[in-house]
Length: 167
Image (tube, rainbow, N blue to C red; front, side):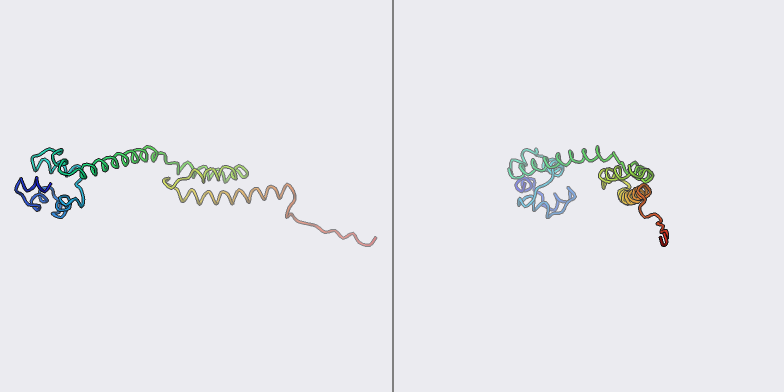
């Protein structure tokens, strides 16, 4: 790049000003300390009036680095598309409603609530609220189950003592 710039007869400052970047960036590119991104590479080729291939032939390391960066960009775009596709499924409100319903159905809530807590993701809008409601639902259901079983088996009910007297 340095040779091309010198053939054109311009300074690093002039090129940097044209590309709206710092002069130090141009210096780093010419010394192979860093490499321009694809947009700046195209703008450089237009400014120097040479093809991108001519610029890249000067520096094989630059060409390799650009190919690696393009691969990283493609990977990032794939990840972003996946996140956007799966990020649309916000279950926060549905999980919150299920938590509230599970409070009303005592034994069933002990089964439903752990499933709800497992499906709750940090990307849901009501993530923390669903978690708190789930814990409360578990406690309410556990207490309700204990109360039902206590009534069924007469646990903790009033006890009476009868005096039999002397026989």
